[in-house]
Image 1 (cartoon, rainbow, N blue to C red):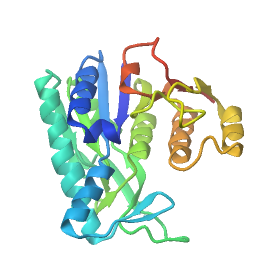
Image 2 (cartoon, rainbow, N blue to C red):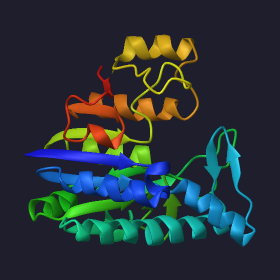
Image 3 (tube, rainbow, N blue to C red):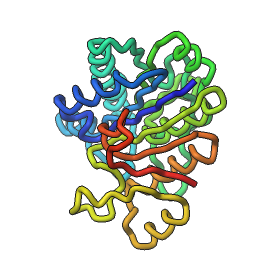
Length: 257
């Protein structure tokens, strides 16, 4: 059975009208599907309103106790349930999940090396049996970027990584295609040129683009997750706008080994 796993982030979540379009397109995908989302920008805005300082190191959020509470409210509450409600309006029978729900995603606290990221989790296990049960009963999981350690502790977890880990866990039972959707048409050669999409990236091209500093910052871990998925039997991985869903002619970046 084919399975489409779509991760959305950034302005796709923050802009209500854009989100409506995103979820309408997602609902039209035929067959089994899973949606993974973050919500970092909204969490940052709420932190500001509550007077909680947002601390970042190398583009990654330091998650102290107060920040974890805000992330849980935003990711697991406001964003997740808004998405689920809108999908129901599009006749997509969705179920919102954090990693703790149905023991879906387990993790451990990220080890302290140069920085202590606080309550940030690295995924150790995905409950493939549970996801398969939902999918085989025509239920669409909507996963937020929160995992748990099965000892009562929640963790902030990178949404790109969650999408990749779910994809690899289900690759043995499904024909998995992984889509990373954001506001751009794909990986750009030039940030100033919206149409400078690099249509194909393999490991050799990736290494060259990193050396040229064309791929940098937040795109580095995203590509790492793409290659990780392909190395573990995920069939296809794409990066681009939501318009690429169900449209093979749409400009996008295809990742291969």
